[in-house]
Image (cartoon, rainbow, N blue to C red; front, side, top):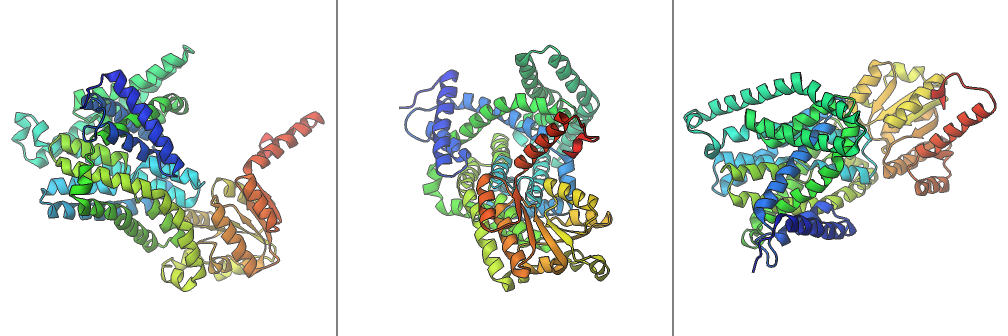
Length: 569
């Protein structure tokens, strides 16, 4: 017998169950989102035992959506996208189109309408920001070239889903008024776009000034709770106002509010205050989504569930891998991007939830999406762990990897004239991220010859325009290091954030030139000990170097010699 639970009990049981099953999921090396969804399933009406009040859970989920989208807008970075736009924009658009086509075809086979199939396909095409970022952080790949490509790709997907949120109300016959119902779908879509445009202008002209000003006024009160309340009020208030005044969804209104605040100097403090609310209500959002899932579909339609999982895990992965390789990027980049995007999450839930609400998608489609999300998120850590194994196989079988190498020869090797300019004491730096950039600047200041190897083609093009000797490629492959003139190199600096990749580069460099001096950037003491065991000439971590620089500066102060430039330490 199911008991209807009041709001407090719904929150208490939801958060407690989410904590328990989230902890179990983490212990099993799965994403905690899997645990949150399972907690929701157990509290839902389709499983025996207590049943939470679904109407209350749905309202809590709405708040979760608002704060999730507010956080997405707060961290949305056009700058990050521009750095990888050459692969992220066409890659993401291509994958969305193909994945949406596969989903629409499956919807057609199930007897659904074309709008239902397209919405179903869109939900299958977009990956979870939360799952991807956590996977990148776990493998220390957030600042890597490959990680930035994956994040840029996801930004484009998020923008595409924002457009989908704009179109949904216009395509929903049961939420349009009598006057609007007489218009054609194209006219309804045009009206929706005009409303969104008006909202965007209001936010750009007024919101961009008003919201940061309100937060600054609040910050001057020195009250932490008042500032936290202001952040919460801005997120929910703008979302509500956008919905009431412009017919814009809560999610879209909250996204724009986050974007406007990001442009101010209050963005970091707002992010700190919003994070607790965002995390708590995001958990309730996933629990509420789980409550809507009917596990019976796993028994009644196992083949359809399997097809959805295959589209997400296999179909999307193959599409992403082929697109990345076709654009001339190394196999390792394609593997990381394809593994990172082989799952679906919060945007998919938002789309199918609104689709069912507006009568565009049958509840069966929502259950299939939720089943696909559960299995794909659970499998994602294993896909990430398999990247290194597949890449190691490619390294051991150069014929296989060479068959996938479609790089532009102009960027993958130095010109004859460049090669002739290099002296016998040149330094090769692998990885031009934040750490690699600092290393290269110091090498040039020391007037040493330098060759940079980086997987990001756009970055290499930019470096060449600036006059650097740079090539694109995978430095774990011998041919890439040969093209970087390792025969003339006295030293190689390995500044990639992936420790597995760093070890492979070390092995390859020593196979080609046994007496080359090796400098390695490590992430922790365990990696330092490993590289010391491999007789690396110099290995350190950013934390150790920061400590040395501070001590060096303090020693100058104590001796009475103040350095002219404090940034030298």
